[in-house]
Image (tube, rainbow, N blue to C red):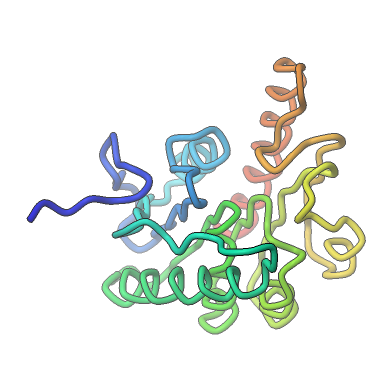
Length: 202
């Protein structure tokens, strides 16, 4: 039986850099590492000499049922942790960094438990488990979010005392409606924030 992955891989999923430093690019529900935020996170990491490894879900993640988000977030968290734990445990590099987008930010608990630095793109700050993990975390991390994203909370992000980039009017995709030039500028600024963060932890 042929294995299928979600979202579907297209290019090589590992780009070699320093073998002692590996960054995992953790996708969202349908947001692959080839899409802009994760693509430029990878470019930043490569610029600073990191090996990058894309993560692909081995099956479609659990689907939402009903209006209550909490049970779904818990299901997704268990799914993310189970798959990512296997991947991290198999990695031999002594230094690991995580970059997660949306659903991928549910790995914040793993980062806290293992004291791994991370970049969390559009983190699910309306999810109590994610917020608890961010509060527990001792390793450096960067938050990237949009003011118009319903799962972003600027006050909470500020209260964590960690660096964060907030884009005015940006939605969950870190874009603004009917203004592609502004969306590109948001991406540029997010990339600058990621570059500064990676430079500090490299």
